[in-house]
Length: 312
Ligand SMILES: C[S@@+](CC[C@H](N)C(=O)[O-])C[C@H]1O[C@@H](n2cnc3c(N)ncnc32)[C@H](O)[C@@H]1O
Image (cartoon, rainbow, N blue to C red; front, side, top):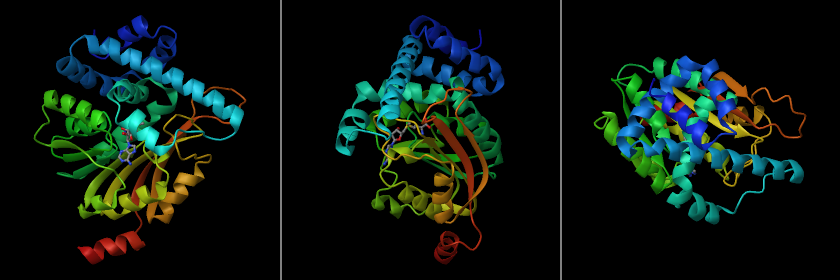
């Protein structure tokens, strides 16, 4: 049995209703899905022991049911109705009993959801494998830390700094890092991605990852501005976000692919590649949950690039 299959077996035991569709996505994309799940299974077993596969499956099931319920309410109300930000901070980001199962789900959906598997392909083939030698990489909202760890696993020459607002998420990332063999090259810390105090860190990163964060912010404009400020003139950004996809902590509603594109362009970035997928639902609904991922670069001559050149 390949290590990845421990997650599938756990889904069959602990998330029976959801297992068939997750396994179908895995089987249609095995090479890509195992690129994520094989190392993740090794780190999971080493950091948390064999019980963690069942915990991950239960987290995945709880999350998927919560998403389905939130989407029904959204379809009825016609707009997102998230909790207020202070409640999201205490009830989601600071609460380990919510955050840890959520983090298992957040990473497993890349292998198990038709709308997310294309993000993994873009991330691996058009971002990680294209980074220049010895690149410095920044991950904003690193959550479980697995995207950063995959960068390190694939690219032994690069260094990665991951930041997240959630202490329990950073604890998960740090625990996986400790068994990954990448401790000298990857670090995780608690930090708000758009806190102006983080602007002290004006390092020019050749790679920036901002995956599934923008929809969690009241002002995603400030995230794109922070990214534009920190990306090196020839660097690349992997940016993704959710569209028409309700959750208790999704506070910014994107309806059209053009909206995050516009925010990126307004910040002085150029879209090089884009994938946007809702999976083949065939459903005729008012709102179709989708996930959009892009590769962005600084636009030559943009305000962002001029200010980088000025500061250099
Ligand atoms: C859906 S998870 C995404 C995790 C990971 N990037 C991924 O793609 O699976 C959203 C993450 O955003 C983090 N987050 C929310 N607001 C943030 C902020 N202002 N600064 C940094 N992280 C934030 C949460 O703690 C959570 O880990």
